[in-house]
Every structure is written in C-alpha cells, then in structure tokens.
Image (cartoon, rainbow, N blue to C red; front, side, top):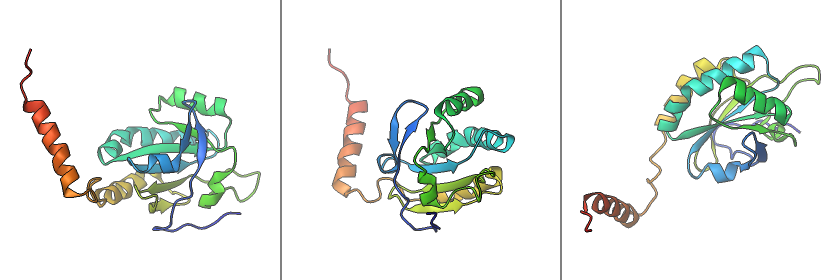
Length: 180
C-alpha cells in the first residue's frame, strides 16, 4: 500500500542489493552522509538523462555531505548495464521487494512506468526534501543544494571534549616530527 511521505517524516528503511554486489541499508548509510534517493523505472531517455545529471552533480553533492543511491525494480543485469554504459560512480539498487511503495512511489497502472522521484534523507533518517514525481532533476539540483547547505555540521552534536581530542590528535600527528 502506497503512503504519502512529507518533509520531516522518518524515511522508511530498506535493504537492497546494489550493482556493486552488496546489500545496502538506508539506516547504515545515513549516519555518515545525507542520502539522495532517486527512484526510477526502466531505462528510457528520461531516466538516462536524469542519471547523467545526478552523476554530473555527484562531486558537489559529496562536498555537501551527500551520496546518491538509484533505486529501481529493473533486473540486476539491466541496472549493471546502465551503470556501466553511463559510467555512474554511485550504486543502483534493485527494488525486488517493492520498498518504493513505502515512499509512495509507483506506477498508476502496470502498463505505465512510475515517474521518477527524488528524496533527500538527512543523517537522522528524516526526509529533508522531496519531489514525487520530480518534474526535472536538473531544476531540483538547486533545491537539493540549498537543503544540504542548511544542514548543520556532522559534529554539531558531539561533546566539545570529543571534538577537541580529535583536533588535538590531528594537529599533533601532522606537526610532530618523526624520530628515526
């Protein structure tokens, strides 16, 4: 049953096999980085164009503290071919158990492909931004960048003593001369 998620809701967890032959779980990814989820059906021109745009923005997203995961019900061979043909440096995940329905993403009928959707999930597994369906990935990238800029530092909730120890270790390790 499809649900409607809104900004601030907890993003449903999933465990899906990736094109890198690993099982990825959302709850394992979000503590380190924000996650941009791109839900798509098929391998059409729109999907290929969207994936190229995401690939082109991957470096900036990484600098902002986010990673990309593409999610589709397509067969794994098709996803691996798509990743290879488009030279994607981010994993595509096979939604073989219809986790996309928990995000409210799906086709209106079996004859139609579901329109692409984007969800930005923060490090607390809350939905920070969404577009379902997404009219244009290219236009959405600006909104996603603004949402990521508004995120606090990853260390904002760390106790000051922890931050000071890490900074002290890093400074002393670099400045300390090596004795042979």
